[in-house]
Length: 222
Image (cartoon, rainbow, N blue to C red; front, side, top):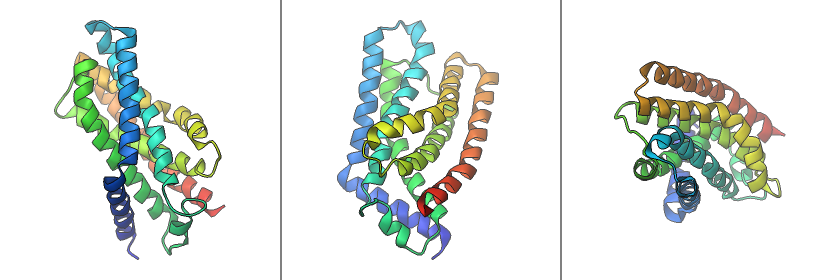
């Protein structure tokens, strides 16, 4: 079967399944929104403080919220070990990984597009027509690359909802800090730092694009 056709088929299957159940969308959206409201109203920041902490609240909410959806994305697959049926198919492991990753990425981008207007209102997030979408795409790609790998690693663990954040969050910190820094630079119109943060996101994404499929292949072969 054609490599890209396999990826497309997996993405289409996952998106179609999610459009019917909306379990992943609901879990990530509700959890991320809850974190945003708790931090926003619990700390009662001033408008000047929000320039600094608003981006951090938004991206922490997205990273922590994504752990619930990433675990569900793998756990929803049929079979005793969740990915058994897909692994039996005559397809390469990396095409399976990229299919799952792209479907997770697509779902997360949809959620971020819904949450961003709310974040602009309650967190005073500054929006740039070009740079904000670029940062969101690059940061979400990094989160999806790492998250898909570690969601697979923790899929068969009894307390996967607890294990996944312990594995996932420490590794995603460079992407998280870069996204926060980029959003702060957008808010302060700091063009030089903004370009540095975007460059760092590009580098980390490039590293994860190479490493994560290899890790996924090793995990699923064992």
